[in-house]
Image (cartoon, rainbow, N blue to C red; front, side):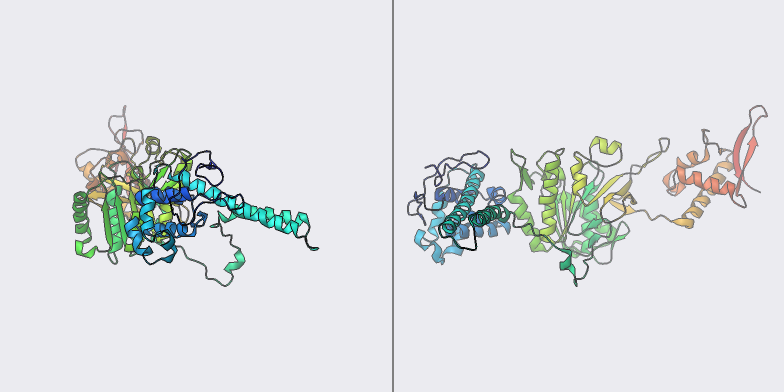
Length: 539
């Protein structure tokens, strides 16, 4: 059957689903009268049947089809009930839905709950579900347009002194525009006058100025740098009371860790090492839920040939777990596992963050952290960026964990890490936290600040100078010399130099040389024809 009432009705994007014959004894047989509002009972039944046997098609259909688009009220009720179950993470099939419709008189003319089984049996193909949905939407718009036209005809045929034909045409134009506006009914403008008398909302955080609540944070780092460990440590601390994460206070809350690159054994082993650090046991961690997904498909959003993204059935299942657990922190590890689009496509990036990860944050009142890998360029430029700049623009906060930067002539410590706040809409960017990997966990490096730090660096400089002088291994104040004191001291072991670096020693040397009472002086030594300079203690 084709035409305005047939399943062959073309959709707005040009796709034409195969025609479908309505079920015999359907709840509202199709009418071929031109005076009847256009509808396609067969397509509505085919779509509902496809969704009943393949719930995975629902997320993409839900992106274009609303309950009110169905012509038949009974189909509206079935579609709405399916959505409730699926978005709760439950299966929607003739059996589970049958419990809700056993006593529903609206289904009685069609055969009661048995109608659901008929719908499942009449499913033509799941692959055309989205095309059937677009057909239903187009026909819903056609019905609205028909009603508006009927109103215009009635008004023109029954003129009144207070309304001209032009007035009726303008009213019809407004009605037609409302058809589109109603499809964007989630657009709710707000006037600042509505805020009068209302308290100003406060920004909330999981980690103050680092991870905001109800927003998405991107955590970038090269493979193996420790992102998964860092987030499992954070979720552990949020489950405990009065514990610090990398020296920072956190919000006490529940968490869900969706880890696509770890199995349960790995997460268990890692947790035991974390527990030793925080002196807790697994019995203290009831507020954590772990979802190890290694070896399973973790895709939360897919994209069609037109570039439109839609969350997957797995997204709804994960969201249901988050809501039931009342979690306020959700970690998605990693982005490459949960995102199936093109990483350098700006539209794909923004759709995933805003309609996927951020949707989770909004709907569940939680913070969502997406762990991701930077590109080789992002690593070499030390920006931590990856793919399109759409990612950086969409994340409200972006963190980058990376090895400690050292001078080319310094010896790098592979256990050192730095967590840098590269982007923050609500805080100052550029702040960094230094940490060190030790016994399977990251230990925050407490570093003195201000004059305490300077005084300590001066003392370490003098101690190292004394050690060198005792064995006549002289160090020079000249930056170009091979035995330049800050360079030599920075190459000592981490414990010997107490974590200070070449730049720290260079500043300490200047203070010790230039102070009111210099603690060190430059002394000439060697042959008169080839004089050298060395640093020694002042008398």
